[in-house]
View 1 (tube, rainbow, N blue to C red):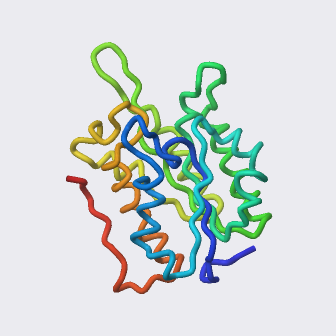
View 2 (cartoon, one colour):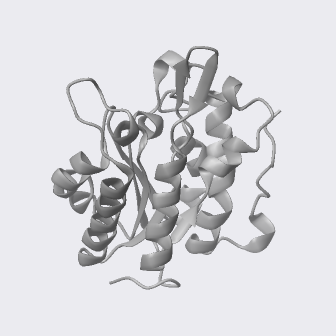
Length: 216
């Protein structure tokens, strides 16, 4: 298994429609957070390849089932996992994955990544709002807690994207359809992931960017 400090040349981002980019919210391959990270980290100059392995509707159960196709065949040195929105509220034809099962599935993904020699970085999922009479609420906190717990138990890095969104004074404007971040939301995701990835990739400290607390 690759150890922290060894050279990381290939990073695979495993995700759902947030990682893939949701065009109905103005996000596409050219302005999604993975693309922004390629630019900000100058991956071409580093000789590092970023691969987006993401599909709309993916949950942790599907990711395990399709691990060979979505991850193993991509030969990652580092697997970055941001999943959970479809576990918490799946399409109508699928049952909800409860937080405890989500946690077990993340644990399985971490172990599977280790078996193919990859490090893992877990990313807490962005907020997902559910409407009710009189307002709406974020349904993701139990899944965020589960993600953090897996990172703690398995000694892998956890990047708190959900927490960064929660700090925003206008968080709902960053998620216009209650599920998918806007282009400004992807700026925030990229800014939060930039520093942890820079550290893993060995980017010189002078070239690192400070992640903004708020997105104007």
